[in-house]
View 1 (cartoon, helix red, strand yellow):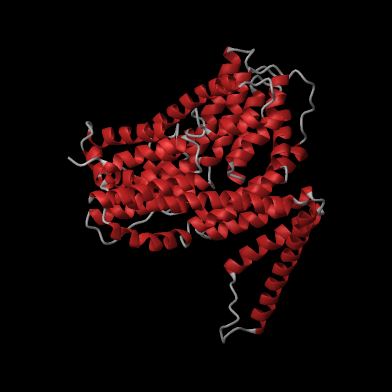
View 2: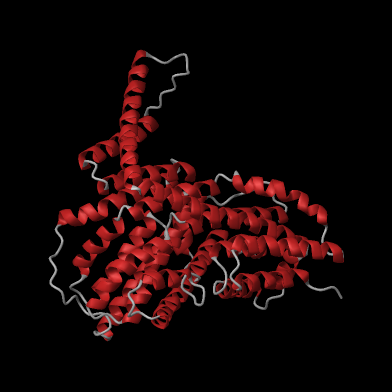
Length: 516
């Protein structure tokens, strides 16, 4: 009886990651070792390695994944332009006078930052530095306050646009196509980033509502856990609220609206988001608000006018009026470009541009290195028979499709204690998802269930990233034990949200079906 090298390979990967080696190198090393071991034992066809170059090229030229650097850049620029500070300060003053009001403001700001930046680390650190000391000063229970900050930061993974949803869209689309080929279908449907974003919108807002309901309910049952603000604060004026909230909302509408409306591809929408983030950063850098508003209006006018009345100068039937309109379009574009370059010049002098580019390069390199090496790992894993084994395990689960889905969700949840969402998404899901789709499970609904499950991995000890981010930013009086205990109720709320979505699938499926 030959050794189950595929299972041993997966176990070895988890063991080596727990030892603390860099993830991308660990994945590549384990894959290389087991490819050679399987070849020597006659369980692996080494000629499969010839597909490596094609797989890597496919990843690097994937039109979905190439949107990631621009979305990361958008988030980093917004994070460094202190938009979180303005939002937290304004929302804290708005809700602080009610029990649990500071906690509600943290969740709402987390949702807004999730939809505009999508960067978990940046949100958790910002809230840990700004909101957590304020909550502690006003008598909040340290465990509850820590749990709220960690949880609010993770909303960036379920509320679009997020890196997790972009990666999931690509993984699920490939898995869906595999399942259709296995069914003998030749007219293949795909799952787009727009469908994934649309499917995650309502569940993301549902999560925010569940968190806020819990905070308000706990504040009224246990007033000492989340009291109203004891400090005297002035209620923000309508103008202050608008100044803090309207710019990120406009950016959200521009990015998500262009994707969901089918106006722009993910790459184009991410470019819009990056330019919008640069314009918002101009406020912090001292650029005239009037100039920023004019540039934004020029870009908006150009986008609307060009879609209604496109001008193609290469055509032979262009009239004199067409050349006039083209000149107007060029003038709007050049004016906006001039303002953007002016802001970038100031950002370079301020150091913001260099810091943003470095952060973007670091995050993007980490994500793509992991995806590339995971592609290598999955090739070896499939070559060792891992795909067939996973398919057999799911088929033999008691309870049919429901039992298989429960097993898959529990497996992903447990792996979230040890592995990062990128590793789970690009190593495990490509072999786990096709059998589930073949059993008749809706791929859109399944995508959102898995997204919420993977979001939980940021909160689960011992390797939840939100816990580490907050540990680095929290005041000294907050202990690691308090942070770990503080997230437990919110992990339970995540499970409750999954149960609600399980019972009412239309929360995930209604919007994408209506839009697409």
